[in-house]
Length: 349
Image 1: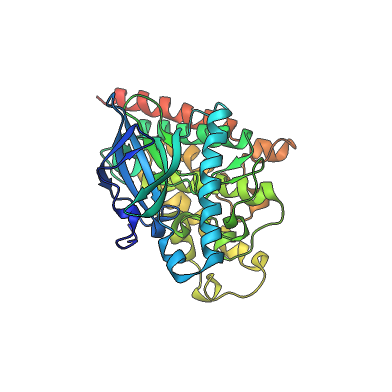
Image 2: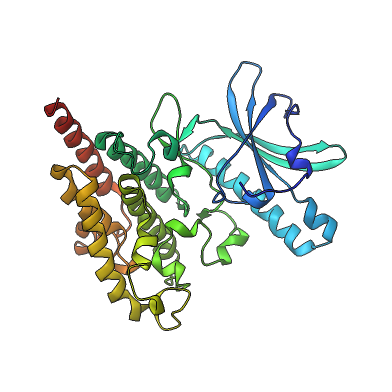
């Protein structure tokens, strides 16, 4: 986790938040989490023993530096993350970690803002380590079905997650895998957060090619829901192979065509990305996915992660003038693959 120094957000252990949640331990998270450079995370517990996840925000550096613009932006980001969680809760979305409360606390004369959300013991990266052959294909496909269902719920409510990755898919003890961390999301029904002006807000390792080239397509839906489709496909690829499709594809094309070097139009590099994309997806998934499932898994990733965002999505949706960002067919595909893989594993015993 990126360090935030010895600010007040680092000193919440032993504090009681909202007169109910006792902060008992610090937890470490990966650098890719939204706001990691100015937040600290904890496990808290209610008087009844219910655990919770606490994300504490430290705005002290900007206050001390007198950087009012940065401070205002951080406060807006905190308010947005709180509001989008509340919006999800009030909209009946149950595939995203719920918010229990939000507020601020005075720590030795300094104010710390915090969010209190549903606790999950593990994330998908820990529960199903990417590329680990000991994890069954059935379990991996079932997890992908759950993530796709969570994204579908968000999309129906007008929310794009924009940072779906192994560490943001979490595993409660009793229930389906859920999505966490809405700090990079965008919601059509709320005031735009400051990060809406940024081309890329999630972790670059998993991001769609067009955002890495800083060539986002015009239009809210294709830019943001199209990003979520790519992230779902990349999650499928990563969970089976252990590597990110974005990273591998960009290192399979000539160096002068990579985002750090290329200055032309994105359309010029798309054919090169498509060629590398098709080659790598087939090569890696044919080795990592059981044979009766590999072809369908390959087709899913090729569709979800197409380098041209206007050709991204299920082929039936694209050809029938349906919702190009619809996830229902992919949910059914992952569910079918989970059942097929389970039958296959039973047949091998």
